[in-house]
Length: 129
Image 1 (cartoon, one colour):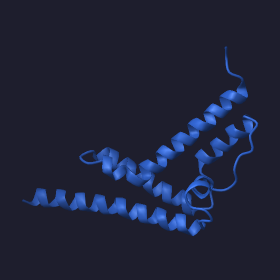
Image 2 (cartoon, helix red, strand yellow):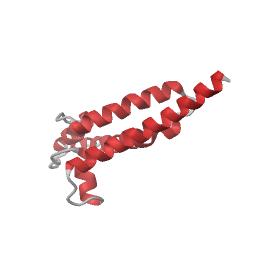
Image 3 (cartoon, one colour):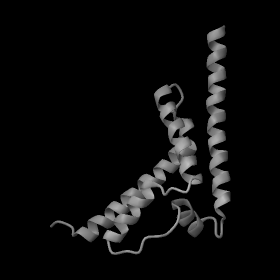
Image 4 (spheres, one colour):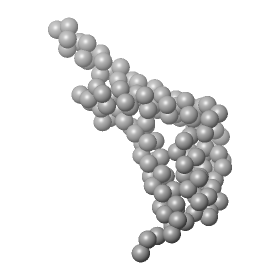
């Protein structure tokens, strides 16, 4: 028996939520998985910069928009505001200000950049002798 559209839309909303969380973890910890994989490191760097920009800029995240759309299609009331504020505020950081998330995103970006810088210095030292 085929699921009804509201059931399918809810399943798709959950799928987008899982993808959203995976993307956030990729942005935060991706440098740990890119050793000796320059193409993957390049992809991670692009994703990390995009993650910071989408957190700081006034634009909504496309994944948030998709999740909200599927929730509406499923007959549920979608949340308002950024993804991180909605989920982290509700579970981990009550009453967190958006600036805290922005600073946290900046720190995560700098930490990943430090990993890449250290690798680059090691690579450069190995090439020079």
